[in-house]
Image (cartoon, rainbow, N blue to C red; front, top):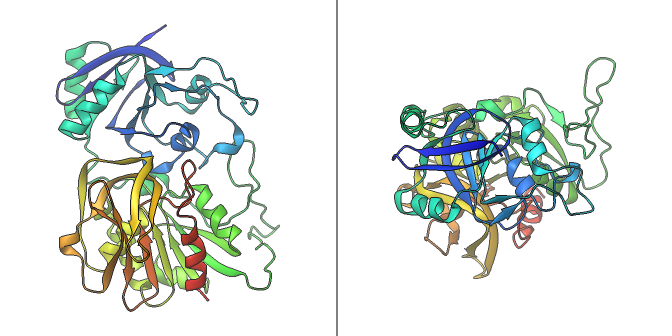
Length: 380
């Protein structure tokens, strides 16, 4: 097997085997504790600019398939596993993980002590790193890691948001992209509207497709707009509600997104997930901060403070809302039971709410799927 190496900015270097694409990439090194769902994780645009480590010891054993993608592209910079399965043993498999990464241009490394790496990240915090199957000199790799751009302060949303408007459809083309069927005049036809259907405009900052599936399953017609649009452009669609999606990077630099959300509060019902949650908080005057190593996995316990129910949730974020800066018009509705951070807020006077975690799962538990129905009732 070809060799590969992962170097952290603190000088630590791990050597292993190369799989996936050949190359040299940099990014923030983070970890996810999910046991399954690696394909959904790989295709989550929120991982843009990151090198992801999986804590489960073997990844790739059930292969990859067309149905499990959460976006049209693999956005993460690199992928780190203890053992990469070279064969796919599930009947749904359409290929192997290694071939999938190679086709997508994602550099991978296997055969390293991921327990040691994750322990270091938990103690020291998430760090910038360089993953390479081309450069194997430890000193050179550490120098590259120290010089690589940091995640904080970068606008990664512009790199993953769609370029054009679309109407959500479950039909996908051979590359996993939504199959759009414009008319001869180049205008996208709307799907049929049934009695009771609510029209939701989803602001796409890097949205996972299962979010749109959940909205559609609750009886919503979903129009997807690029996250850079203005409030006036959103309201021109006369939506019954607006959804604020997940997405990558530092929320504090997304002034154009915050302005749009601020101009929508009180004018139309709002529901945000992950980055959308942070943008709603910022729009109302709160601040965000970077977590030491983030929440990424499918087993994070969250309490709904309004019902007392504890939900096991799927999460993927490296930033959180600073409770000390929370304005009086926002009430905390959900709290992380591991570290006490805010996991949900509700506006006290306007129809607006958000959660930090992923109720659409994919992959993960479905304990929080009720939030989509709650959003639909908000639009009644």
